Amino acid sequence: MKPQRAQWFAITHASELLTGAGLRLNDGRHPKEEDLGRIVDGALVYEVIRVGKKKVPGKVLWVGATRDLPKRFRDSRRTLNLKNKKILIPGLVDCHTHLVFSGDRSEEFSRRCGGESYESIAASGGGIVTTVQSTRNASERELLALAIARVRESMSFGVRTLEIKSGYGLDEDSEIKQLRVIRKLQLRFPELKIQSTFLGAHAVPQGRDRSKYVGEILEQILPRVAREKLADAVDVFVDRGYFDAEDARRILSQAKSAGLLCKIHADELSNTESAALAAELGALSADHLLQVSENGIRSLARSQTTAVLLPGTAFYLKAQHAPARKLLDAGVRVAISTDFNPGTCVTLNLPAVMTIAALYLEMTRAEIFCSVTYSAARALGFHSQRGTLEKGLDAAFAIFPVRRFEELYYRFAWSA
Image (cartoon, rainbow, N blue to C red; front, side, top):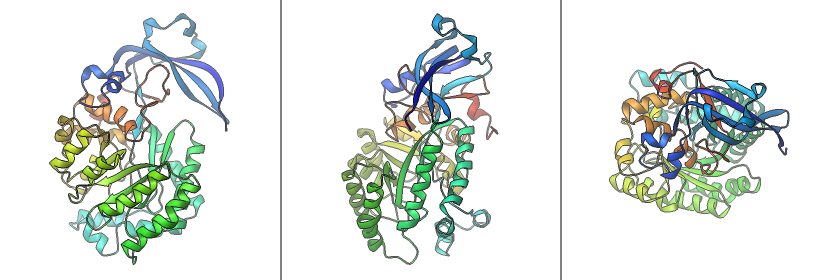
């Protein structure tokens, strides 16, 4: 439905407003305090557009200190006064989630807490197989209802841009079902920007030969996904026991030919040099990177590929964290995300993941801010319009009931 233009609206007296404008100038590399564009007692003016029955933010019209607000925008009837008690920042970007699925694996979690490994549980018939079966059995309506609740929860934590992957169908009809749910979410939540990612190569279906399944992806599923315009991007899990570099080359080359963006789940369980592969293929992102090599780090630093780190997953699995400091110091653009999924990180609380990044990845305030705003938008290819608050860009903002940005992750696992 075509949006209709409407009036402007203003937000004034934010205790601090962070534009992030300097992050864009440096393309998210080596973030510094001065890049945050901190404005004390800040104000933002944006247009409001109507999409169907909803009024949603359009573009930023003006940003600056409240005292400098132009006279034409001084109308109390169109103004929200934050009374210097709340912050105003770019809406958070959760750039790696598996939000559409059915079922839970809480029993499996208790087994892991008792000492069993994730790989051992998967080998005994648990893990992703459990979620795949439940997701295949669920109707599209059931999956949509579950996903709507999760999207709303994500938004409650300030997320305004969201990536959602398929990957729990692992056959043509079920993968298509997941992607159709994501498309319905895109229509239902015009206030969000949602990227749909086809992750048919998430795992080899139980009882299937890998090469034959890759053939099915190439010959049947991916062409249908492209034909029905159900995805914006394609992802491949390259790791020990999953898919190899040649599988990724074939799948992602075909995806590119179909006009789709590319990503790789890289170097998570073992080093497969898939970070270097992602850089070579010009992928938007290389995600996980717990086992990334020095060569992989150098390759990412020389490329336009964003490193997406998922510290909540390492925390949840009690695994070694990705070498964030090495990546950042080498000049790699780094984003962080929740990796929300039913097996290895069951949270949509991106600020809580920011806490883990601060404590265990030793990331600075500027690096954390950049990782959930500009760099995360860059990991989705949305950076030309999102990730910072600047005139002419999307007014994708979030207001939080704290006085300074760092309180978001200082207050661990706060409830919205």
